[in-house]
Image (cartoon, rainbow, N blue to C red; front, side):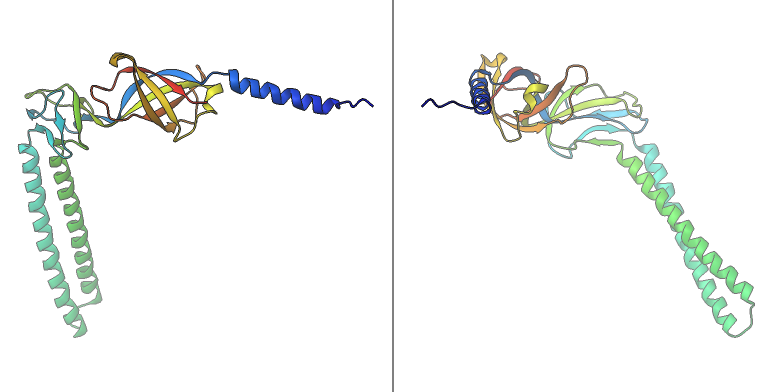
Length: 259
C-alpha cells in the first residue's frame, strides 16, 4: 500500500528548505563608514569682546574646566560693580521702609495715624522687597555675562580646530574652537533597510580600518537610529571601538555584521 504526502506538508517542507538555504547562502551584511569621536562640540562666544588670550593650539589635550579663551572683561566688571552697588542701596532702602512701617503700626495701634498711612507704609515695604529682587537679578545677569569672558572646556578632550587669535573681536555664535572627546571612539556607518532588522544593540561586529593596513577590530553596536534616510533608505548604526594606537576620527573603514 503506497503512502502519499499531502500537499500542505509538501509546501511546508519546501518553505523550510528554502529558508534554511537562504540562511546558509545569504551573506552577512557589510557597509562602509568612518571613525567618529564619542563627543564633539563647537565652542563659540556669547558676547562681543576682544580676545586677550588663546591658551591652546590644535592638537592640545585639555582637561574639563580649563580656560581656553580669555575675552576682555573690564567693562563687564564695571557693570557688575554698578549692579552690586545698586543692590546694596535697594537693601538699605528696604530695611529703612520696614523700620518706618513698624513705627506706623505702633502708632496705628494707638490710633494716632490713619489706616491709609499704614497701608502706604506696607506698600513701600513690599515695593522695596521687589526692588531688591530686581537688583539681585541684575547682579546675577552681570555675573553671568562676566563668566562668558572665560571660555572653558566642557569636557576633557582634544582641540582639533582653532579659529581665533589674540586681538580678535568675537561675535555671538561665531565658532572659535572645536573640541573632541577621544576617550572612546565609535564607528558610524549606514546599513541598508533590508539589513537593519538583522542588527541589534550589543551585537559584536568586525571593523576593518584601511589606513592601518586593514587592521581588524571587534566593535560593539551601541546605537541604531530608528529612522532611515528618505532618499537612500539606509539607517545609521554606531559601534564602540576598542582602544587602538593611531586610530583617529575621520578614518575610513568597513563593517561586517555577523548573521
